[in-house]
Amino acid sequence: MIQMLRNLITASFALLLILVFGVTSAQAKTVEVKLGTDAGMLAFEPSSVTISAGDSVKFVNNKLAPHNAVFEGHDELSHPDLAFAPGESWTETFSTAGNYDYYCEPHRGAGMVGKVVVN
Image (cartoon, rainbow, N blue to C red; front, side, top):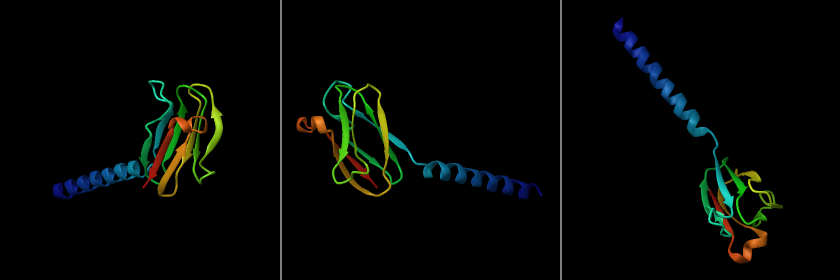
């Protein structure tokens, strides 16, 4: 009887671990990209992020406004409106695997470009 109770407790604990880790790993995540570096450079920080399909990228205006993010060939992901206020933000969700190159329209010539890699 004691052995059966131990087996039941062990099985219940194992099931609990599977549920906890299974639910956690299945949840979509959001990564943040700053528009303008903390040092005041005209760059996205980080300039490249790797996420999984279903995850999101939150773009946050940081320094030296105005900024935006235009995805080449993906108008549905682009945010052509300029962000002027510090902390102004928007979020884009990526549901299809691929490489997504983007740039800041006012600062593209200065090299303000980025990439989202979706696995």
